[in-house]
Image 1 (cartoon, helix red, strand yellow):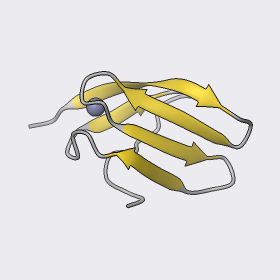
Image 2: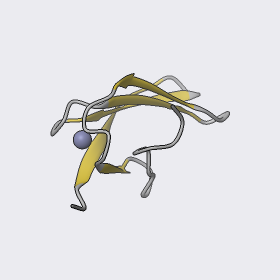
Image 3: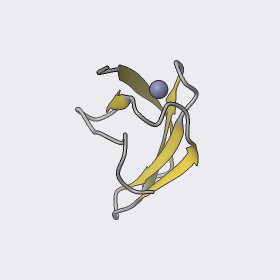
Length: 62
Ligand SMILES: [Zn+2]
């Protein structure tokens, strides 16, 4: 199964960007300085795209 969810940017403080997926409620923080923090796991196996061009935050980082 190849599932793709679309995430939307909900907050941006200049360094960290908070993304939210409405489908599985996944929440991740992506830092421009590098790094990714998963706040809410959501659907671990879905590929998440959205924000500034396609970024994949599905598996890496945690
Ligand atoms: Zn999702």
